[in-house]
Picture 1: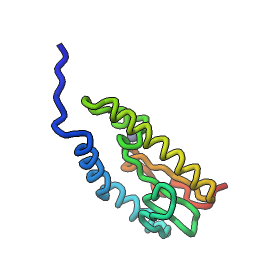
Picture 2: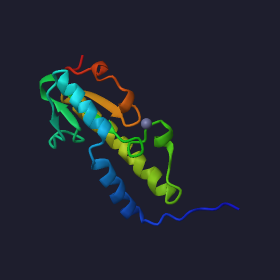
Picture 3: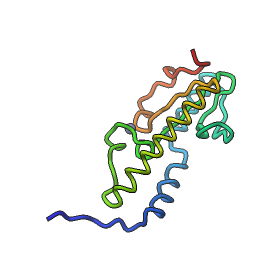
Picture 4: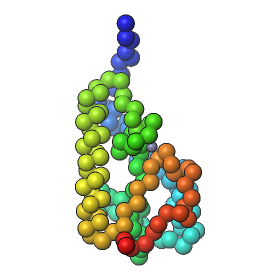
Length: 138
Ligand SMILES: [Zn+2]
């Protein structure tokens, strides 16, 4: 017999919780920002008028950075592949939509002349900020 633990939250409520978790500035993200700042890069946060509202925008360098949560953006990693036990179809479809939107936004940004850098939540801690390419697209 398969036992299943019922999700105590509705998909809507669960969404709200996940959003709240996501919108917090995580410590690794702040550490990354500080490191980039100390490398001399000046950025703006959450620029609303660019496709996908990139997390960091480097206007002078025509570069945007997205810091993507592995679950929300469907990263090909352990965390990203995990689907909540209940409402599986709902989540699978939602994450697929998010991924499609991410691709569309990145393409739109590239057409506007931006370099698009995606940093995954699961990689951010071990990332060498100096190894990130920040500069106009080739
Ligand atoms: Zn990941």
